[in-house]
Every structure is written in C-alpha cells, then in structure tokens.
Length: 247
Image (tube, rainbow, N blue to C red; front, top):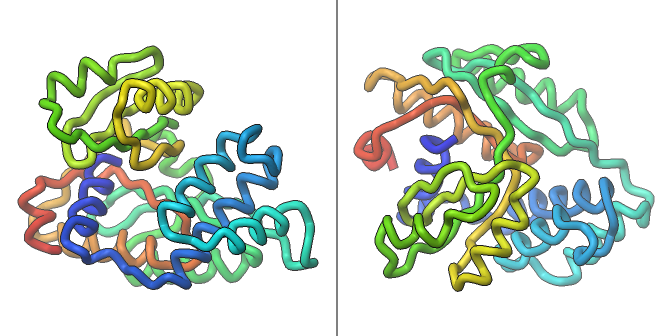
C-alpha cells in the first residue's frame, strides 16, 4: 500500500490527480451510502459514516449532496441499492491487486473491471486469489508540519499504532480496531489529520523492473479512475525517483 499511496501523494502534490468534480462526488456519495447503510445514519454514532462525511467535506462536496446520500442509504428516492464488492487479481509484472468497488450493477462492474485487467496484461481472479498477501490496517494521514521524524514518531506512539512512516503527509499505521481512537489521540495532541480510513496492506511486496514501472502505474491509475472503484491496493513497491519520473 505504501508504494501506491506514495504515487497518489506525488500526483496530488504536482496537481496531476483527476479533479473532475462529478466523478469525485459520485465516489464520495457511494462511500457515504455504504457507511450509512451498514450502521447508523447519524455520523456521531457511526465512525465510518463520520469519516466518509469528513472526507466529502474536505473534497468540497455540497451539504445537500451529503444529506441526499445519507437519505438514499435509508431507502429514500427508490433508487437501485448500492453494494460493496471486492475484486482480486494480478496486474502487469505479476503485481497483486485488490479493488474495492461500490456499484448498483455488479454484472456491469465485473465485466468492465475484467476488461481493464485484461487490457493491462493482468487477470481478474477469484476471491482469495491474492487476499492472503494482504492484511487489514488503519491508515491515518497527518501533516507533519515542522516536526522532525523523531518528534512525529514520539507523538504518534499511542496504543494501537503499528508503524509510523514519515513523509508529506506522514502515514500512521494502526490496528483496524484502533483507527478512530488513534485519530482522536493524534488530533488531541495537536496534529492535523488529513484522512483516516481502513485499508489493506501487502505483507509480501514486489518491486517491478524499471521497464515495467510505467505499465504498472498506468494500470493502477486506470482502475482508480473507474467510476465504481472506491480504493485500489497493490503489493507493488517503487522508488520515489521512479514515481517522480512518471508524473
């Protein structure tokens, strides 16, 4: 996950992330719907929903859109139900990939993702085909500000933290069940939290050959740009210099 998130952050820093508001709002709405559907529709009583709403606000999503998404989760509007589906497979250069999608038509989504895997010289596999190479983790991204690596690490060493990765932003890796308690503790200590979410992290990393880096990154980008795809995880690890060269 770290190599892939590093790629995303480099693109953010250089202004190369797709900024189409409609596509972004669609993904954010689906995240809110799924969070509200699987718990309370009150963000104060549903941490996942609170995180989704906070993320939507950070993306400048209008309040009315957020309210409509929560209402849809409660069955308002009579629209087709959004469901959460996880896909697994291998991309170019044998990179293991997990894709979390949110869709109202699983047949369409599966067909389109199968095409993207095939076009990228990969293969969409069965459930469990690569999942054994990943573990669930909480990821809290924070702004380090003027803190040194040692100073940030000292602040971040609270119960439930597994790892601290210094950068801009820095990543605080947590046990899944400790995600929100860690986020709250970091905020109480004055750190600016950019995002907090549950995700998957590879336990067995692979480093693509230099000749394959661009193909792998193009494949991961194509998956992330699909309107039904919420998150993409891979076990690809890259040097920052390699990533900078392809932004």
